Length: 598
Ligand code: F6R
Image 1: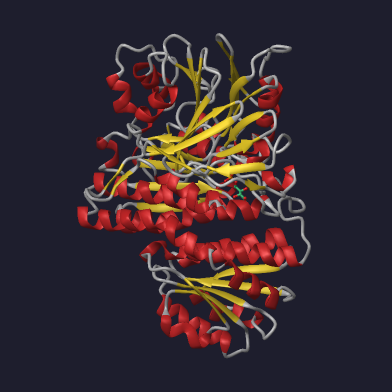
Image 2: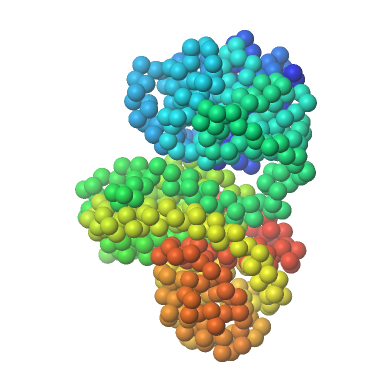
C-alpha cells in the first residue's frame, strides 16, 4: 500500500502535494517523492519520510503528483522511490499496487533506459512509446490495457496542465475543489481543500484539469457521483473507522489480494514466490524451523501443519526467544524461517542469526522491505499487507498465513509431495480467502451483539483443534492485549486435563468449529463446557453444532483455511469488547508495535 496524490489548479502545487503526502504517510513511509510539472518536469525523491525530501523553497508549478511508498518490488532506495519517468524525463508516474506482468513488459522495452528495480517503471516507458506529445489520456488508456495486476496510477507530462489517473483494484478518489482538481489514494490527502469527492471505479481513467474532471471507462464517458464527506481529517485517515485496528481488520480482503497477486496459477497448481531456492536444496530438505514471536508465532503454528501435511517436510515452530540450536540436526538440510511482520523483532532476529551461524539457510517472511530480517536473511518473501498502524496485529497475521500457504504449495510441488490436483485445490481455496473474509466482515453486527452480551465477563476461553488451535491462541492474545481481560486459548482436547476446572457460567467460551479444526471432536469439547453452563460462541461451519451454541457465527466453506476466516470473527470480538470497555485500542498499555529489545 502506498499513498498517491495529484493536484492541478490555480494554486501553487508544491505545498498542496507536500501537505497531502504528510497526511498519507500512514499508507507507507519508506520513501517519498514529488514531480512538479510546468514547462519542464522536476523530480524530487528520496528514501525516508516526506520531511526527508529536499524540496525547493517555492515553485510556480500548478500541477504536481506525489507519492509516499511502502515497498513491494525493490528496496527502499532513492532510485526506487516514485515518481518514475520515461527515458527523456518528460513523463512522471506514481503508482500504488503491483504490476504482475512487469518483467515481460520490460523485456519488450529493451531499448529503454531503466534506472530502478520497480515494477512501476515500465509504465512511463510504455507511455513514452504510446504518446507523441498529443493526447495523454489516450496514451494512458492504451497502456493500462496492457497491465496485469492491481494499480492506481497518476501520470503527468511536461507541458501538459493535466493529470491522468487510472485505477484497477487499488483505490483512487477525486476531489473537486474551488481552486482545482485533486486525486489521491485516500480522502485525507486533500480534505483541507475540498470535501466534494467522487470515487473512481475499476477500469476508470480520469483526466483532471484545473476546472474539470472527465472520466471514461472502456473508452466511454461515465459519470461518477459527487459526494460530500463529513469526516474530519483524522477520521478520514482512518477511512471513517474509529480505530486503525478496525480499519485494518476491514482491509484484509484487499490486503490478501495483494499478497496473492501474480503468485499463483490455480489451473496448473503452481505457486511462485520468486524465492530462488535451488531445487537440489529443496528436494532433500529435512527440516524447517520456524522462529517467531506473538501473533507471528501463531501464524507459524498454522504454517507448520500446512507444510507438514502438504510439503512433506518436518517442521518445528519455536518461540524466537526460546530458540536454541540443538544437536542431532543437519543444518545443511535445514531451512530456518523467520516470520516477522516488522522484520525488526530482536528475539526473532537473534534466533535467525543463531540458525545462520549453525549453517542453516534462512528465509524471512516479512511485511517490511529493507527491514533487518529482509537484509540479513538468505532469502526473503514479502507478505504485502501494507503498513499496519494498530499495535495489535490483524491483517499481517492473515497475510502471513496466506504467504506461508503459497510457500507450502511451492515447496510441496518442488518436493514432488503435492499432486497438481491437490495443489490446484489448495490454491483455489487460498484465492477464495479474501471473498470469504469479506462475507465474515459483512456479519460484523452479530459479533458486536455477542461482544455486548459478554463484555463484562471476568475471563474468556478460546478452544480449537489442529488449524483451529493457533487461531484459538491468537483469538485469546488479541482479546487480552486490547481489552486487558483474562483470556486463554486451549487445544480443545486439553480442556479435560486441567483448564475445565476454570469453566463456569461466567466464562464465555469461543470455539473454532470449522473444517481443518476437527469440528466433530471439538463439538465434544463444546458439549463439556456447555453442560457446565458456560455460554458458547461458535465460529462454525458445522450445522450440527447449532443447538449447542449461544451465538453462531457462520464460516464459509474453505477447507483448511476456514480457521483463518474464523479468526476474523475473533478479531472483531476482541475489538468490540475492548471498545465497550473503553480501552486504548490502537495503543494498548505496555505494548509497542515493534519490539526491538530482547
Ligand atoms: C500481537 C502482536 C505481537 C507481534 C510480535 C512479533 O498483536 O502484534 O505479538 O506479533 O511482537 O512482531 P513481529 O511480527 O513484528 O516480529
